[in-house]
Amino acid sequence: MTATANATGLVCDVRNVSKLYPGVVALNNVSFDVRRGELHGVIGKNGAGKSTMVNILAGMTERTSGEVFINGVEMPKAFSPLAAEQAGVYLVPQNPPVLAQRSITENIFVGNHLKKKSGLIDEHRMRGVAREIIQHLGFNIDPDQLMGTLPVDTQKLLLLGRGIYVVKADIFMLDEITASLNIEERNYLEKLIGELMNDGKSIIFISHHLKEILHYCHRITVFRNGNKIITENCANLGESDIARLIVGKEVKEYSADDRSDATDGVTDDTILRVEDVTVRKICNGIGFDLRKNEVLGFAGLEGCGKDELFKFMIGAEQGSGRITLDNNRLDISRPAQAIAAGIAYLPRKREEETVFHGRSIEENMLLLIYKRNRSKLGLINSRSARFQSARYTKLMNIKVASDKDDIDSLSGGNKQKVMLSRIMGTEPRVFILNEPTQGIDVEAKQEILKNIRETLAVNAGVLLSCESVQELMTVCDRIVALYKGHVARVFTRDEFSEEVIYRTIQGAKDA
Image (tube, rainbow, N blue to C red; front, side, top):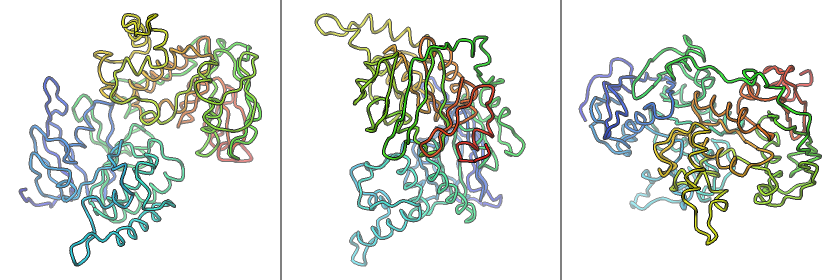
């Protein structure tokens, strides 16, 4: 490493960095910097170059050309993740690479063991420190618990705790860390961010959420097609400005009102009736009905009962209540029965619960309907499978070179379209979509909302939850507001108000 003066107050200074792969320019002569004590937002579509830049700074990818200075010291062209940590750079990735079969303590101290005077690892002291870190993060977890048994969101926060209290980094790179955090976890994250800012640390905050970037960050850098488009103070930009910079054109938000039959298309035919659903004292007598061609939204804070309600409806949660579909009373005790009855479910945690990693796009897409594509001998009819895959790829506008490619070669938005295609193939009467736009860039999000409204809701009904009330308002015919396991209010489209809906799901009596 070559030392240089750090008189500018920059903790990270990237100068003219490029990264070339065969036939692909992942980064093109990019320069940007991060100041001491700054929370710097990084945003762009999937494939824009932001992950490549983060991986270079984390020592996971070698740059082709350019210079990188950390705390005034030039980093070599190729350096390891350990060297990055020793220089003060710490990454909490979107999919944390934990040691699943090792304890929380072992994961927290990996590469940084505390030792006795004899030189032996001091397991007792490490366990005690790990317990203190866990408690400071707001968790009540045994430090001996296996890391792989924890939710990904908890793993991310524990890894952040490792960076703060064990690695003691100067620069933290948080990649989609808030993607599926609940309210309590978000509050703890905000507390940690505040502590880091007070300590003069710097944060590179990668997110697809425009509101989040504007809420947290001082400055923002926008990437597009491997290029840095702009670095600007967040105070000088609005959501529409950032969306335009990300895409390179005006991004028209989809709205159900864009269709002439947005509400006229909803019939009076009630296809689904749910009554008096109670699950583990979380859902308390929830009931609603769904009409043909209707998109019915569900808004609520974490713990409102939405997840438990959806899982009860597909037989993945035990509880009580009545479900009637097309005038037939259903008795569902497992997900396969729900699919057979005409109810298709898309879980919230795509990477953990839905995607079959290491399999092809076609296999992921047709998983639930392969039986229809088998010959009398039980062999897959490859011609029929190719036809079905091509049909859904075109219908959902999935950007793919070949459906034989690995599913993980796709961006988050295109992966989610594949998952939607999978459940569409079962031709259900009811779709249950639990936060289908989570972790997806702004343009893909609008495409998926349009697909939900104009493709999935044709001849079926859709139950939809989203992180954003604003997204629900753009696409839904009605919105059910849940508060502490109860239906607080049902809003019709002419009653939609983001402020009133938010107040209702927070339990306001005057909403």
